[in-house]
Each structure stands twice: as C-alpha cells, then as structure tokens.
Length: 364
Image (cartoon, rainbow, N blue to C red):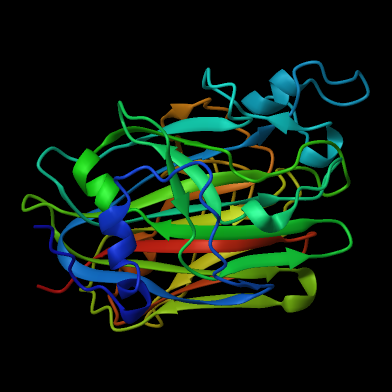
C-alpha cells in the first residue's frame, strides 16, 4: 500500500481521485464543476520531510508556425533561441506529436526518477490562453488527457478551483489534479499530455499554454529534505509591485543546498524588467539566475533544470510563452533558516504564476 507522507488538508481531499486515476474515464464523461476564480492565493498542496526529492516533467502546447511571414523573425530560429521573437508576433499553432486524429495538441516529457524511488505525491498542472485568433470556451479547462510511459491516454479532471482570469487582451486559466496513483504505479519515463484547452491564432497577447507534472519521491540513498508543493493563480503586473510566496516551518542547516521550481504563463523572452529572488531572512536575498534564465528575465519561455534543457518532445529551447524551470537556490541557504520566501516582480507586461515547488536540505 502506498503511504503518502505529510499530506496537508488541502491535498487530502484528492486521495480518492488519485486511487481511481489508473482507470480511464469514458470520453463522454462530463467535466466537473469545481468552480473558478480570477485569483487564487498561494497555499500548500503537499509537504513532506523525508529522504528523497522532487522530479518534474513539463512541455508546452503551442508554438509558432514554420511558414511564418517574412516580416517577423524566422520561427525555426526563434524556437531554437537563435533569434528573438514572442508569441504575439505569430499566427500561433499547436504542438502535436502523436498520431491520434482525435487530439489537436500533444507533447511529451521525461520524468526522471532514481532507481528504487517511491512516489509519495504527484500532481499535474496545465493552463493556457483561450482567446487569441480564436476564442475557446472555458468548459474544457478542467479536462486533459495523459498517457503514462508505454500507456494509452486517460482522462484527468481538475479536482480543485480553476484559476480563470479575463482581461482586455487575454483569457487565461490554470487547472490541476492529483495523479499520485498513476505516477506511483507507472514510475519514471516519458509522459504525454494532450487536449489541453488552448487557443491558436494571433493577437497582441499571443497564444500560450503548457503542462507540468510534479512528483515528490522517497529514496533511502538521498539526503533528508523538506519537499513542499504550493499552488494558486496570481498575476504579476507592474502595478502590483511584488508577490511574496513563503513556505514556513522549514528548519534548514547552514550550508544547506536546495532547488526551487516555478510554473508560469505568458512570460516573454528578451523583455527584461523581471526578478525572482529567494531569501531565508538570515542573509540577503539571492537573485535567481542561470545559463538559461537571466537575472532580469527569469520568465523567458524556458523549460530547464538548473539552466540545462529538460528532456522532452519537442524540445524547443524557446516555448513562446510557457515557463517551467527548476532553479538552484543554494546561495540563498548559506546561513540556513526556518522559512523560505520567493519574491516575484515585473516592470514588463507581466505573467501569471500557477505553482512553485521546493526541495531543501533539512536539519537532521
């Protein structure tokens, strides 16, 4: 029997859904109505202190067309990061890697778990923009398909409030579901997600969308760590100033090491004017930066692990509007502490944040 350590009350309501997820739902099943909100304050979804870590797989659902007009940078070069462009420049289309005529978007990514790891919690996040050249209805925001390594598509239904924010230029949302049962049984490997509700076309805001699978695991050969998954739906705009997301009650020794993951929507590459800092309150906050994420442009349409490309298909270095990055935050932990705060700012047009996850050494 699977034992899930440290489940918060917010995540406990998902236990029955996780146990049943390995069974495919009929395609005619009605999507649930968990409710929507234009803003969801961040709260803890899962927490554990155990020997182990957090793994994640992620990919985007929208991209630029290869036959882009001559008045914009060539799409192929933008995808590869050798030319600068953003999703508002193109008549955006879908990423679709499978051979299934019943899906209009699909992408895959590798969930890398160490041999012998036991998954204690897993959650799938997805979201996108519903209004671009076309307007997609929101009724399917809470529905997506997932295929485990070597498996067939199964329907996943959102099990919590969906963040859904409409403005004059976009219609964005984020949703999530507990998939612990599926991932604990299937383990590591390539996961495919399809039928994410996202619009195609061209508009000033541009098309964007993607998914992230976050898995906490236990493994006796790894350090004792605090593992924390938090989610919500917060829009970062210049008028907001800053957003702080704090995980408390995290006793960390001096010289601890750690990592922080961020899932964000509609971050444009090359605009600058953004920051992400991490602090414990015992030392100056550390500004996050690495080889793929500049210190003034962390929401730059990348899916990376510590500055390196994450394994996925397709593996475009520039996702044109979707970020799912794992950042090293060890410099912020040099003096240890008892809490961790991620601070987000922007002076640009902004972005939306859907989830953050933390892995930091614990005091023994």
